[in-house]
Every structure is written in structure tokens, then in C-alpha cells.
Length: 621
Image (cartoon, rainbow, N blue to C red; front, side):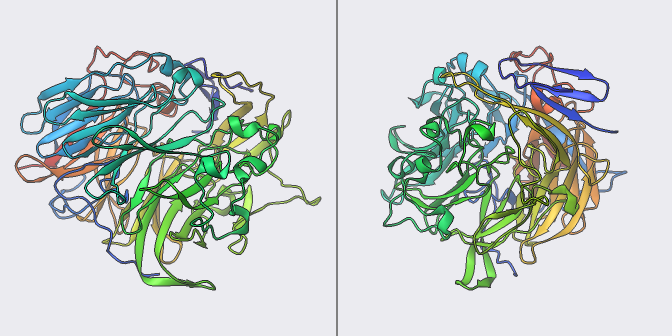
């Protein structure tokens, strides 16, 4: 069955064994590591818990000894705080002192809750242009706020960033960055970093969404105190637009050297509709003042309509935070034909025992689990790929490419007897059983890194796809897609997700646990030697970080697509919290095939049943 992409229709329907989600169809059959990177302690003030984005908590009150057993759990729910808005509650809440802050999906309401009582302190309701709701891709989520200097800062869907006084809930400043009528929206998380060029000040870093709308992506920096624009860097266009300075730019591979490749790697002027947005999570290395982030697929999705490598779509960027200048760029998947993009987070960590290559020793690394199925470890100063093994369950889980050539930095595509790529996609032809699917071996869902166990914990998918390119016409401000896709179970067995413990030092899996339902949210790792995450079967769970053994599970009233956090409650004792609430896209992967709570469709933003929730857990007295 063919399903045409239609991003103007927020709907899905169920057929026998076939799930249609907003135009997608899903078919199923039933080196030693140092501990230099720190985690969070009492508070949680950014999406990853710290600027490196490790999603790690140093709290250990809740541990293998205190959490109890599956039969007699000692972790109990303290609060279920209702947000009043339906839809996918993505990202994380924040905790500052005894206050928990939550930003909802559209219309992006910010609420402060008192952790002593569970009651609402105040609510800030911004004015958001509803037009953005109709042009935003892939659910009207918000990936979260950041906190610094008494301000809670976040994006609203209509290309606006707001700063709110954390004590009073009063707006301090509001900066409009683009016009949603052009197709640009902003649903990504903000990140607040020090401005090392101006000591004592800070920058708010954010990126654009809507790579599917015939626009080109960007990253911007705002002054934290005033909201004033400091710099803008595009992801397609001239070196000047991309902020590539030939005096400081130092990409390792010839394929990624500068020279206006953001124009020359595109046919004619198609870079102007180049997509390559920055809606995933941004991380920061304070030692080197470097931002790291990935870009989405180049536009249009029909790759035959955009010959060339299409720089800088599907790429990982390292950018100087204080100036915006690109330090290096690595295009992960040139001429991305599969919507693999590279929006997965990139996490800076330090190695106690450096990795040695022909270029020297490398201890400052960047780890990136890409949608394309390869786990990249970079030298984070130069962009050299130190290793890039597969991280899927079985070799057949990746069939578009054989391996990554560490000399050239290029993927080595699987070829047929005539020397043609076996999984290339083309207009008017269906390429079957491409693995992984456009959902990726791993999507946007953040992994967690534990410096205690030297392990990444990676949420993965077991999905493949059939893909056909369709002719698309560019109309300003309208969807610019051009593809027909069916997603189905992958070759690794009758499960849709898998939690993987990954050893960077060896480039291999320590353990892996199949999950019948997708892991569509992020992971939390703690010093208590536990990991926490949820699956799309209304389940929140904890596992032993060393073995993967299940040690805690509880049912939610609705599944989660958020990332758990940990913090100290008002009594000084550890808590763990996670969102629940699923909108139309993630809802299609649930057991019921529907979003929850509320009506079928996140267009119902005002909830009569309390909407999404934040579930807060503590140890029983």
C-alpha cells in the first residue's frame, strides 16, 4: 500500500496490520575512559543535565540496593503534575531549588510547580502564532527550556525565544527570529553557554526546525541578558553564510574542506531550499568553547531533484560559541537519500587512555550515534573519525553501506554486480527493505553517558523501510517533500526497539535488551548504577547499568517521549521524574495506535483530563 506524504493533514488511520502516521506507513508482525565529565547534582538546568549533554546524575540515593525488587518496589510516585495540554511532552523539565519548570507542546505554556507541595506556583502563557502549528513537521513538540541567571529561556513554535523570570513568571524579553509564514518553526531546545569573548555574559544557542518546508536551516546566538541577536550561521550557502573562516576552519577530510561547498555541492540555486535544519540537541565543550550539533536531511527528500553531496545536510558541526565560526564540519551521509540526517546528539567526553591514529593521540573525543547505523567517535578538535563501527543488533540491520572508510571519511556503499548502490533511492522507483529506516537506528532520542561505568546507553530502533522518490514542486512556505515511505520491522527479531549499552573504548556492545515497543524517549544514567527510560507501551522502567537486568517497572497512564531527570527534592533526597503524554506521530507506534491523553490528534491542545503529566518518584520512607 502506498501512502503519499501530506504534511497538511494531521491524521492517521489503522488498516489490517498497517499503521498510517501522517503519511508514513508502519508494518509489523506481532580505550579506557576518564571521569572528567561531570553530571548534575541537586538541580537539572538544561536538557542534558549539563552542557555536555550526558544525561547523567551524580545522585546515588536511589541505587541497586535501595530501589527494591520487581515484586516489592521501593520507588513510589510522589506527584503526577498535570500540564493541562495534550500532545507529545518531549525533552525534560527543569529543576532549580525547590521548583520544577515545564514547557508544554504547542501552545508552549511554561508552568512552575512547587516540589514541596506539588502545587502550581505560576503559569506563563505566551502569545504564539497558530500558523506555525500548521506548517510544523512531525508533531508540535517542544524539546525544552534552559535556566541561568534567574531566567528560564525557551523557544515557542512560531520562531520566538522568550526569557521568563524564574521567581515571578513575568516575561523579561522576547525575540522574534523568523516568520512562520515562510515555513520556519522552532521546536528545539535552547542551550545557555558562557560567552567567552565577553566574560560575565552568556549566550542562548538555538536552531531552526522545518527542514521539510523548502527553507535552509540555521543556528543563532542571543545575548542572555537582553535577547539581542549576536550571530547567525546558516547550514547551506556560501562560506560566509555558514560562517566558515578559512583561517580557523580545520576539517580533517578533503571532502569537507571549505570553498563555498554549501553552494557548489548543489544544482543551481537549490541550496536556498536546502533544509538541513538544527532541531536536535546542541551540546557544549567549555574547555575549547565549542558547540556541537547535527543537521537534518537536505531538502527536498526526493534525492534525484538535488544532485550533488548537498552540503551541509546530514552533517555534524563544531562551532566556536563566542564567535559562531565553524571550527570543523563532517558530512556524515553525503547526498542523503534516506532521511538519515545527523540530528542525534553529539557528546563530548575525555579519554584517560588516548586513541592513537596516524595523525597522533586523541583524548578529547566526541561520540555520535547516527541514524544511519554507525557509531562515530571523533577527535573533537579536528573532526577526524577515530572509529565508526555498526551499533545495530545484527549486521543486516544496516544494508545501505558496508562500513565507513576512516581514511576518506566516506561511507562505503553496498554495490550490486554492476557497481550501482543497491539501496539507492530514485524518483518513480520503489527501493525495498532499506535498513535502517528513516526513523534511524537511533533517532533524536538522547543517549546517556555514565562516567562511572564508562558506558553510553543508547535507545535504538529495529526498523527498515520501502522508499520511493516523488516529484515535488517548490512553493514558498509550503511542504517540500517528495517521497513515499513504508516502515516495517527490521531483521533483528520481533521487537521494535532495543536498549544498548555501548563501550566507546572497544567500539562494541556491552549488553543489549530487546524492547517490544519502541524506545521513543531519552535515557537517564545515575551514580546509583541505574538507567531509567520509558517505552511506547505505557511503561517506565529502570535497569542495572552493568547487566541490563530489569530492576523496576511501573505503568504510566500514557507513554513517554521525554527524557527522565534526577534531582534533590525539597527534603534533600533524590527524585526521578519523567514526562508522560504522546501526540499523533509517536502515538502511531503505541499499542493502541493512538495519541494520549485526549482526542486523536495534538490539535486538541486544551485538555479536559489534565493533559500530559510529570511523574515524580521517590524512595518509600
